[in-house]
Structure formats: C-alpha cells, structure tokens
Image 1 (tube, rainbow, N blue to C red):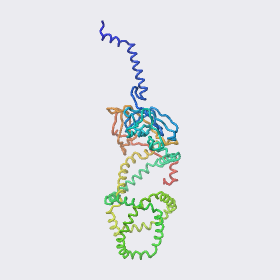
Image 2 (cartoon, rainbow, N blue to C red; image 1 turned 90 degrees about the vertical axis):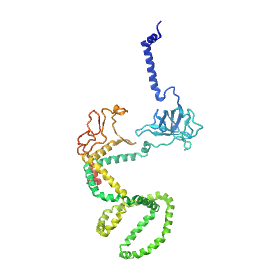
Image 3 (cartoon, one colour; image 1 turned 180 degrees about the vertical axis):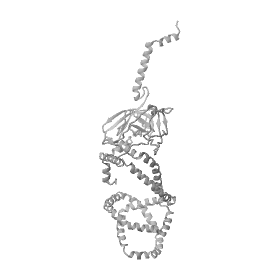
Image 4 (cartoon, rainbow, N blue to C red; image 1 turned 120 degrees about the vertical axis):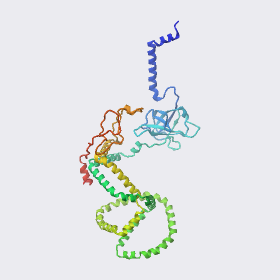
Length: 483
C-alpha cells in the first residue's frame, strides 16, 4: 500500500489540478480588487445617508473622516429635488462607515471640506454628545433652513471664495497682472540703478535710524494714543471738518500785524492760564468719562466714511494745484534751513531726539536695507527679479471666465516620488543656488544623470535678457512712467 505522503505528492503533481487552483485564486483576487473600492466583502459596515447643499468636486469613494482619521468612504452621490424643509436642490451621499460608529448621535454634524489646494474633497463628521435616539443603519441626516435642525455645516473653500468675483472683476485682475508684467519687463538696468541708489542712501542713514530705533521713543504708546485719538474723532468727523474750515479763516486773520502783539501777551496769559487749567482738571476727568460713553456712537462710522469719500473726491482739484504750492513752499524751506542752523534750534532737537519718535519706522528701514543688500548681488549679476516677474506673469497669462490658470509641467521620477530608505541615484537638488558675478546657478545647472546634492560647482553666468513686449515703452511714456 502506498503511503499517504506518496498519494498527496501525486495529487500536487497533477498539472490540471494545479492549473485549476491557480485560475480560481486569480479569479478571486481579481474579484476582490474590483469590489475593494466599495469595501471588502464579508466586512460589515454601518451605512447611513447625509444630505449636503453642494457636492461639487466630491467623488465616489472619497474619504469620510472623524478628527482627521479615515472611518469610511462615500459610496453613492445622488441628486435630490427641493423639499419642504429645504427649498433648494441638494445631493444625498451614501456613506459606508466603521461599525464602531453605530449609532451616530442625533446631534451629529458633517461638513464637505477641501482635501488640498489642488482639488478633491472629503466628508468630515462631527459626532454629537446625545447618547439616545442615534441614527439607525440606513438612516438619513437631512438639510433644513432651521439652523438647529440642519446637520450640514457650511464650508467656504477657495473655489467659493474666488467665485465671489464676477467675470468683469476676474478679467480686470488678469489685465492688471498682465500690465504689471509688461511694466516691469525689460527694466533690469533700472532696477539695478534703483537698488544701487537705495543702498548708497541707506549707509548715511544708519546713525539716524539707530537713533529712531531706540526703545526710549515709546513708539508703541504713541501709536496706541494715536489710535485712541482717531477713534474719538471719528464720530465727530463733520464737526472736525467745520473746525478745519474755520481754522483757515483764523490763520488768514493771523497774517496781520496784530499777531506780534498777541505773542507779546503770551507770558502774562500763560501765568493766568496755569491756575485755570489746574482748576479745570475735574472737568477734563469728566470729559474723559464722556468720551468713553460716546463709544457706542461708532455706529455712525459708515456715514462718516461716506463723507470722507466725498471729501477725498472734492480734494482732487486741490491736488492739481500742488505744483503751484510747491513753488511757494520754497520760501518756507529756506526759513527751515535757517532754523536748522540756529544754535537754539539745535539744542531743542537734541532734547527731542532723546525721546525717540520712530522706533517702528526706523526698524522697518533697517530691515529693508538688509533685504536690498542681500538681493542686490543676485539682481546685478543674474537679473533674478525681472526673470522671476516675467515667469510669474507668464504662468498666469491664460484662463477663462471663471479664473486664471496656473500653467506648469510636472516631471515625476518614481525613484524620487515614493518613500525610500536611500536617496535616488539621479537626484539633483541645490537648496541655495549661488547668484553672483561668478555663478548664476538657478536655471543653469547641467543635468549629469548622477546624484548631485548641494552646490553643483561653477555654472554659466549667462541669463535671459528681459525686454518689454512691443508697445510697452510707448504706453509707459504716455503714462509718465518712462522718462
């Protein structure tokens, strides 16, 4: 009698049996892979429906998450007509969730959120706190115009935000971007001159800026006080306007010879005013309390803003007379020069300098100087700024009535795309390209096919010459931007 091992060996030596088993395994594997997107078979799920106001860009098999963790997927997306509770068409999503969520509390909320800036959305669940009356398997969370009964939490994504601009606004933004690119194109040498002049200007100003940056100026307190003063003046903008108009009449009266006599009477007046102001301290305290009580008058700000807009529009003819005023200011500037040379004025400015008036502004100038010193070399040698602006404008130069398109060409290398324990053998990456008179590495690195990380060594200093498109210089001259 043959042994059991010999019989088993003969069975597995049968090619027909082995082939049949192999085909069955392959069929089962193909079937499982085909239906896996809807969940593995024989794995129980908790199926519910949720109604959403807008399911755009949400696709079948999109993730369902709780606190960022995936707990299920979207199986169906079905359009539904308006109902009595929600008078607008909506979409019903069929969700397959983990059984551990069964049942969801009746005060559960959900939200369709953007997965990334490149597109794609998912459903985020916010389970409620009520422990009774949970949603059964196959149940539905519905929409309602009543916020207390509505389970869908609104979410404003980038598409919705951009859609707020109408076609005319979108077209205007595109034209503005194009015109800005045309204006800056071909002005590399002028950028160089401006940066060089600014750099030469910043050097002599360093001592003055250090003085302005001193913390003894108490600039933050000054800004806070200025903000409080502006807030207090906003409700009385119309009265303040009248005050300025009356002030013009007052200054006109000061031009006569009586002004000198008034100055002579200033010391006696000051002696009388000192005790008067001391006695007025309680009145000023009450006035401060009154100002605090006037804060509710902030509701008048819209009207004040409209009147301010009217003032600005009315000021255009005034600004047209600025050249004439500048000519008349020459005499005043001569007087200021004499004041600056006066020893008494010098002592006064020294006293004022110890109080430091502009910490914030001086710090901003110091920071600007550092940025310009850093960018100067790259711009002088490699025209970096003009090339970047040209390329940026080109990447957004096309679009439709909805928005501009961002044009790019992805280059994917599997050895660099997926996680690996070793660095790709052909990886080229230079974190900080050198941009100076000896190297213009950005855009000039030569691909060698071998791994190269960091400084690639000497490269060419030849870069593209940016030049304005036809007609740009003529338009700039017409607008007064080109000498």
